[in-house]
Length: 122
Length: 107
Image (cartoon, rainbow over all chains, first blue to last red; front, side, top):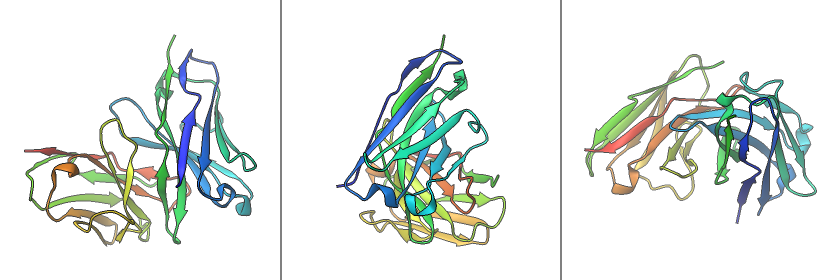
């Protein structure tokens, strides 16, 4: 059974850092792109970024709103993806989901974690 | 970035109704369009990928179609468990974007 479990959320002050983890099981982790998606309270879904699978060099792409502040990485030996968030702003307050990106030539997010809540406040 | 515009933003309907939600892309996205359902307090769930392919396990009352840059999610006969928020998503660009969502409520 495919599972994704996020952890590491919590309350953090503006300007500080936080690292989220996404622990995967039930599939060959290194074969898949992993995305992070966030949802501010009462708002819609916002794509944060992704990391490509090993075969694609593990390179990353980010939304403009987080580019330069957030970094996605992966440890395929542990089946974990990370979202390092630096210089946090109050507008980064959101539920953060990690997702597995499936593809039949057309990418989609077929599995999602339950999310971890990040609150940025003084 | 590719903008995805969903309509309507909210919709009231009754059990048994046929419902249509539309998503318009700001440029051609060549069928790279997915639909998700989200219920309160839960993670989104994939319904339709590649504009019209039904995800495994999703009831056949859900269907997707496309016409140029316009995409449609149709629920043929609403069931009580279908009242939720629906999002479209384009994955044509490496910068992925979602529509703003359509909240489907019980009339």
